[in-house]
Image 1: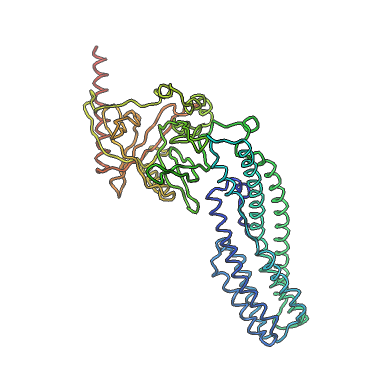
Image 2: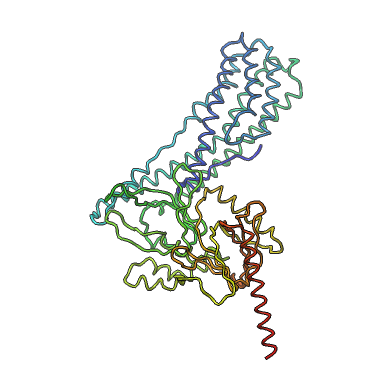
Length: 538
């Protein structure tokens, strides 16, 4: 039979919104399974209780089996093997609808017992929550009025509840995974028992049962046994994995782990986890809200519980990090994450080996989160130069209002198709992740370079040498979209060039911007040729 869909037990401790959403799908599938099995149980109960109505009850069972392929199960809804098998079962049961009697004892033992046991024992699982109360109490610890005894009690409460919740959820995930096996067995075993009872009752002499059906039932029985063996093997492996993860995760239950036991990794370029964010509730009052945050490229994203995808909080390229003091909270910082966001703000994630580069700049990242009188001076090297006005010796300088959509590293640069494909992928990714916010900039085109300038502060956000621009094209249908491909020599650790495609949306026609870039390259080429001729003449 096809593979079984499973919940990832290794992600139970993280408790991310994605894991909760996946858990909701499994619980929805369990509810659908319970509803379907209730109907099937009632049909079989009619067969057992009313021998005089055996024909009608068998026909109802056959109809329910035919409707299996029409059921909308969130998991395994397109199981063609199971649908085909049940269709064949439906055909057999329909042929047996004219039978008048069934041996009551055989039906009770072979048909009613498995499905009754499945409903009463396997569809009663419930999950419990122990963690939220403890973590909320821990979050309210005050730095100003810190009581060591209360702090130790709260931390012990968090450790116990987190450990208990982790173990409970792991077993709950395992039971839901096992339910996928049991659902198949509980669906096939009663039907198999029913057919075997009929065959035994008619002593394999009924004209409705042929050698072909006997072989078919034997194959189904073998398949059920294979599923059972696979379930037992998976259950054993799952239990071992739970024990291993419990042992490995024990230090992670503590909210403030000892750095000597769990060293802090300051070389990350991606980070995800829960943070308490502060918001105003009045003129002078404020409150804290616990929310899930994660980084995606150069963006800081957040995702609320129940949301399918995250939303953009801010663009964290070229941001700084500052630790702040709060009366009612510890470990507070302003704007961005502490170590990881410093690596992202230096755009290390665009390199091929971001963690190696992050290790080399780790010292500066560590200093960036330490408040001191010289904090401003330490960040002067990271600040872009300000431009108060657009003045240069260039023959051409044109300004366009653009909004940055995204960028991707590309391989081919022979035709504009690479720009069209990059536009398609970036627009699709923004739609999937519900990212609609765009940062507006001024694109300055000169004979030397392309600049992205902040329209309010006049800070140069990005600067691209004109010689690195190898392609520029606008969208075929939406002329407001345009992009250009840049090639940077020595962009990687090994010195190989990096080719990146940048995509923008403009208030103007994208073709005009592309024409302006082409004109700038022509002027630059002509100036270079004049310079070379002048040097040869000298």
